[in-house]
Length: 299
Image 1 (cartoon, helix red, strand yellow):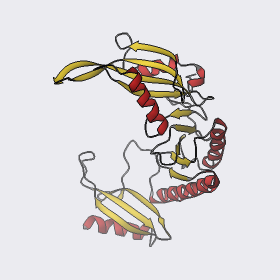
Image 2 (cartoon, one colour):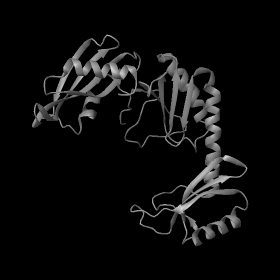
Image 3 (tube, one colour):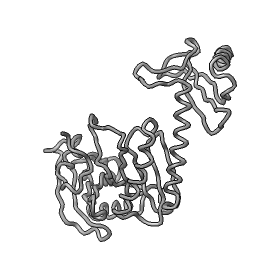
Image 4 (tube, helix red, strand yellow):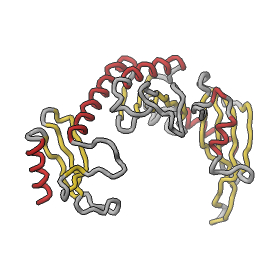
């Protein structure tokens, strides 16, 4: 293949005997519409755990960088990034090893998944946040956003609580969706707690041919078992067969409850006839007491 021969020549001239070619294949598709692009994976010979990948433009004999991407995408930069990623991951494991059952770190997605014997307390969240932040601060060019840290109990697919850790080196002042430091958010699925809440909401509020669907849970940032829960009310729109109907969302309920008894404290209904469905979640956030809000207000 002429394209691969050209790439091998490039490696010999600029990176002699440093990399092993793992993958070199044409990457033409309807998205790029460029027959000269190839997908390349290289392994660093001195450390085979370091694998980089990129698109190669065989015509230009250069790494392909989209016009909107302003980052340095040279082979050296990609390699150094992978080295830093490995060091960062190893340091996180070292710092947290005695505190967790298991852990998975995804640097690309800025996500960490931690498995524990039991759900963390508020004090434990602060402890983990400080420890994780102390590591992320050392790698500002590798970990470039807030970390989403999922805490799950043994055998859960996903944890109920997710902790937001913002490195001190991360500046989100121009962002439109900014988390508070140490913010705690809830996942609607995957955990025992989420399944219990979803089952209770469905059983308590579903009417014949008018189901409800759990949409969001807001956690009190100090009292971790106090929630505001949003669930959408549906009504039948069209009969399809027998007693089955197509349904459509017509409004949103917001209920305050404590776990595990799930006793109703307050209940408010917002009809889509008066409040747009598209903007309902931002509207609901504005209705929440301060202790349940995890986003920074725009200055």
